[in-house]
Length: 91
Image (cartoon, rainbow, N blue to C red; front, top):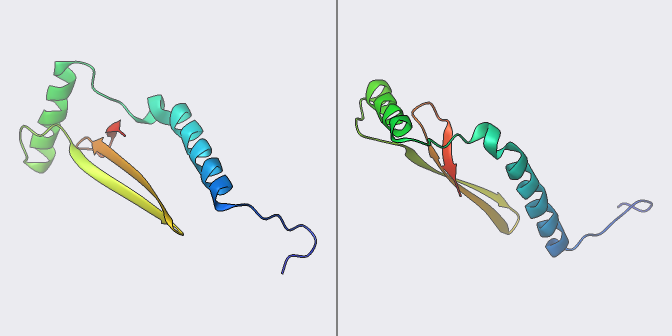
């Protein structure tokens, strides 16, 4: 197959690399893309947006679950989104 530059990595090594890279991505981009409401007025604005856009009053977010299956491993992410699909909170 690959006779000259073949490198074999164990699954545990790949798992550690993926988790480390994902952690760095999250830490660097969290403040830019996840905008958690800080005051009650911010939460009321989110609820008003759901009422206006989706006719679903008193809703402060929708729960979304993303699962990425890679071989035998799964990466799970659960987020709460605003009416405009903006991440408000994530696990």
